[in-house]
Image (cartoon, rainbow, N blue to C red; front, side):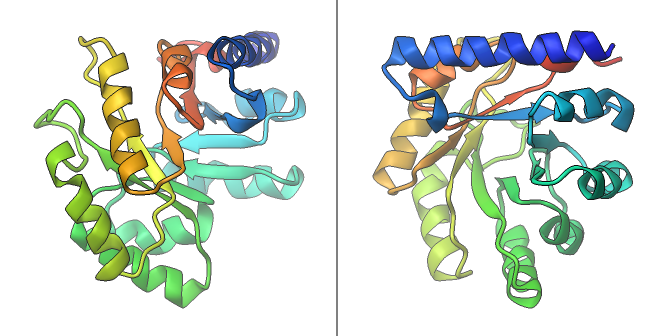
Length: 222
């Protein structure tokens, strides 16, 4: 298993480098977030040992169960929350994560603002955009994004670093990435969390600064 994940990591790194070259971008401008959700510490460790330092988790509870011990053992780990966050978990999320990719509603903004002030800890914050207007998905609708971003800054005093999106599964991802990049640009946001195992090369072409890759590194989840 270890060999598979480190081989997967090498392959993904090479593909990121190639996609950056094709897009005329510097590979150092793209952060690989290795999505370790559902994988055990034993599966994650070889990937850390191969030099990967940025990891993504979907749930606060799962991350709390496995990462503190790993972070004690390995220096320089950066942990990103890429799944939906409940407002009542904001305290734990601010304490544990270096970035939160799923800011998507006023109640969460309020909870995060309170905890950031209290803990004096400022994770990178990404607003999630529901580019496909999918009812089952979290995220701000594209037409509401500018007003929401203004409220984040003016009403809640949050520093938003970038945007995140997950395109609809059955649609070409390119237009969704392009739309997210356009919203970011007009709001002066530098970071774009977009692209997963199947489509990160397209995301890099369209400006992604963070790609969230799980199965291409760790293998399929059961």
